[in-house]
Structures are given as structure tokens and as C-alpha cells.
Image (cartoon, rainbow, N blue to C red; front, top):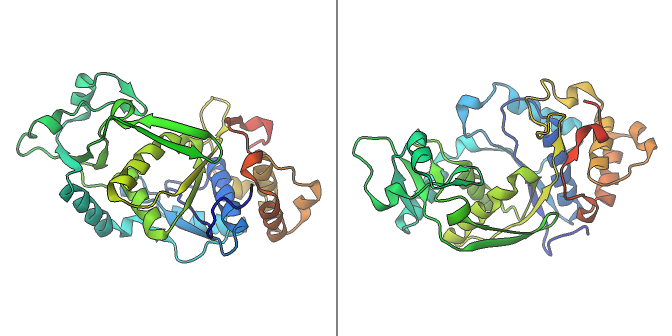
Length: 309
């Protein structure tokens, strides 16, 4: 399976500038790029997810963009920065509020932990305290979206059918924190929609976030992209490879050809050994010609099976 949409694919890669690219991010970047470029007139966009400014590392964005270029992953159009889009996020949040989807919440994490009936996908499920009572005056408030007791179902191009009941499994989730920072779930939905992204290729760790994003798209009556969640590269400690596992980016330790050959192997391909000495452009083109979602394993994979970081 190469082209997965009848129209030209618009894909994207959206790293957080909290450090250099780690191997898991590189795998996601390559997979999303190859998918987009298999489509005639396909476009591949880059967005810097720098919403949480206190966690942003100075210079990280420039380093990430440089590494992508060295790997032969050339983005189409200007780079989008979430830190420059607060007005747009507020505009859409106001729209959701006017339509009756949101409410203010003053509950602290400690209060939620004490009152939550059980744990959900990513922590305690909010019991709806402020939905049923007015938050105390003067306390800082977050903004939550009210969920429904119904299944969200979608077919992932790699993981297959996935279902989730947001009310039972997640609860009413935050769209804007009480410090004013917009939540990832809201920002990524708006950014993908505004950019015309119709195929989201990213790591499997974000699979459980997808129903929340689909729900917001439904609330806004916006089109829903297709999704493909690739398996994760796992470290020796059993956790996914992240910046804490790699103080330096593999882009600084290995040649672009070595990294690309590893990533293609991880994605279920078998690049010939001769490609290690080929140009980056030739290696990327080989990946475009041979990449297929059908080849990608669904389960996470131990890193030491393929690579010695």
C-alpha cells in the first residue's frame, strides 16, 4: 500500500524543541516524509511544538531543522511555530465555549487524585466536579471540554481498529491550563486542520490521544485526517527511546546514510548494503519507492535488535 488517500497527501512532522532529535523522533520523521512523498503532489510540513515555553531549549529548533536537512527530509513551505499561534487557539477555544462544549475548572491535581473514581488512560479520570458546581471565586481555572458517554472508533493504517470511550476512559480533558498554556490536544487539532494535513503519521505512544483529537474535530465539524501510528523503538529499560536515553542526537554520532538504513530496516524494509555508500538523496528515494504500511510491524521493537546507539 503506497498512496493511502485519493487526493494528494499532506503530512507533517511536529517535534518539541526540548532537545536534539532522538532516534524515535527520527523514525517518525522518516516515515511521515516517505508517506507524503509517495503521493503525486504530496507535501510534507514541519511544525515546531513549542507551546510549553519553560521546557523549550534555546537553539533546539534550529538544530532539529538542520538535522532534518542533513537526512534529506526537506519540508514544503514555511515552518510553523505553535508559540506564534496563541490568538488562533484562543479564537477556536472561544468558538467551542460559545457552542457549549467547555467549562471552567478550579480543581487542583491533588483534589482530582482524591476524588477521581479510578485511573484512566493517562492518569486519574476527572469526576466532573466543576461541571456540576461553580468554581470558587478567585481561584485560577483551567478550561475543560465536556465529553460524551459514547465510543470513538477509527481505523489506524498500521494498528487497525481502535476504540475508546472518552467519558469512561479519559474524562473531560483540559484544553487550556490554569497558567494560560493551551493543551497539546487542542493545538495539534487546530494546526493540522489549518495546514490541510490529511494523514498523520506518528509514534504509537500517541495512539490513545487520537480519540480526543477526533472528538474535538467532531465538535468543530471539521474534517478528520487518517492516522498511522508506527511502533516505538524501546530502550533496555523497557521504555520508549527519548531524549533522556540519548544526550546527543544520533545525527551527531552517525552518518545520515547509516541512520536512514537503520530507520528503513526498523520500518520493515530491507535496504541493500550498497545504499550505505550512496547519496542521501538516493537513499531517501529508495525509501519512497519501497515504503509500505503493510511492511511495518504493529508492536514496539527493542532497539538493540537493529542498532547500537
